[in-house]
Image (cartoon, rainbow, N blue to C red; front, side):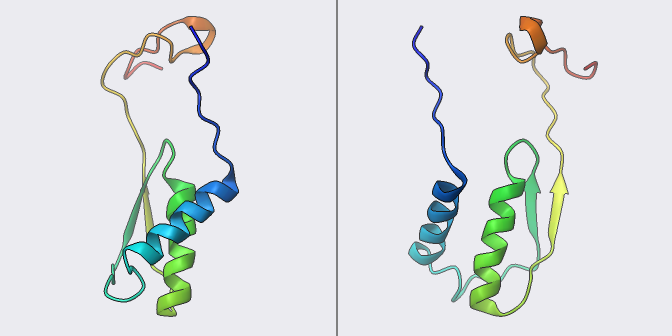
Length: 89
């Protein structure tokens, strides 16, 4: 099976978020009181997004972080090829 991983740099993520802010006009009408960052990949994008919104709005938006729990077994999620068992590991 071929390597199907997609490698994305921090700079690419930063640029994609900046483009989204501009494309969706988030600095103009978008005025959230709170941002929720979901663990498992959402902390860094939330922090970058907050920086762009602060630059446009002039103040920080609080970020609440929540964890991610899996409720199904993933065959190759564990170490050494041993399946991860939700609620146990």
